[in-house]
Image 1 (cartoon, helix red, strand yellow):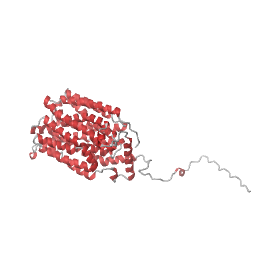
Image 2 (cartoon, helix red, strand yellow; image 1 turned 135 degrees about the vertical axis):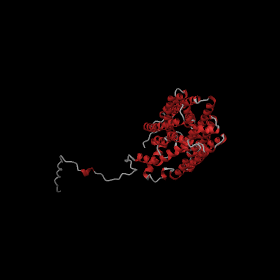
Image 3 (cartoon, one colour; image 1 turned 30 degrees about the vertical axis):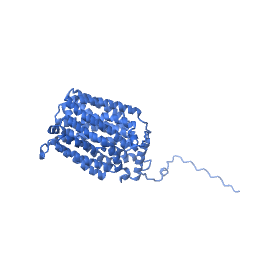
Image 4 (cartoon, helix red, strand yellow; image 1 turned 90 degrees about the vertical axis):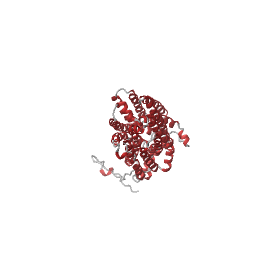
Length: 465
């Protein structure tokens, strides 16, 4: 056998730079569905917000304006028609009765017909009824139209919240809700700016100023309803501005959120409404939203009496409060999402609002009354965004729409009681001090109930998005 000499080892390389080509890997284009694409979630969420939030914001802004513009018309309307504070308050309460009675049925119909169709129906019908208020001449006519207005608008807000839960996972939901909920303080700013000029149209074409206000502020609801019918998509799988990989990520993130909720998954509507979580949150909402809505329904008159300001100055104060509330709302929603905490971001603002109502009721000085009004504007409405994000995250997706509507129904019944009692208190005592004290006491009890819910809240399993 012939043996070959073993090959000599290759000499070691010294002081040689590694070949740049050795570091290259085969080219692989990065796809949106690639797990290595860290910008995918933010990119999808930003695109969804730019596409959806302008419509949601506009719709909600118009809803609030058409709901509370009567408060700016009230002084001259009540004087022209001879309405007492009790008549005005009871009519305001009837709005919340019909809203509450039809809240859950409305959202059940929304689940059947789709958000786009149902919100379009809501906006067009309430725009027509809101404009019809300019024709009232008797208390009975006013009662009927406020009741019909509540029936037309019933289910709108829970429908919008449920719609947001179909597009935005929990990690983003607080910020998203805060960005369209900013319409609440923005509506106060808008009303404060435009109401006085509209009221000065008094006598034009034979109409009173309050009639012009109700007529001109109702038209945008009908127009926006038609826009929503044309451009608002029902679900992510229906849009062309997300590719298939982005749709898959979004539906997966939403499914992960639903699986992370360890609360009961009810087998029937009655069991969903009997959920202790819904009852607890509903009672807390009744005691804070109802009385505060009574204040908002009569806010220009209350501020005029407690501060001594005229109508124009009250409008400026309301505008300043709306701007302040909008800024606080954005910061509160952002901070709640950053900390992934909801309860304390509601409890602390509610405590500040309750204290401000005490100061407003004490009538110590015009300056303190104005400061208290600004505190209420700064923390009342902004805390609602976090509260509704909290409610949405506590409920399983299967009954989220009905659960949100049920919680909001508690608030509507509270608003009927609060608004009616506030007017009766004004006629009985000749002032608003007693009613403002009652609002502060209700805020205290709502804080106690919500804090109990905080201690009993079901654990959530965390999941990255």
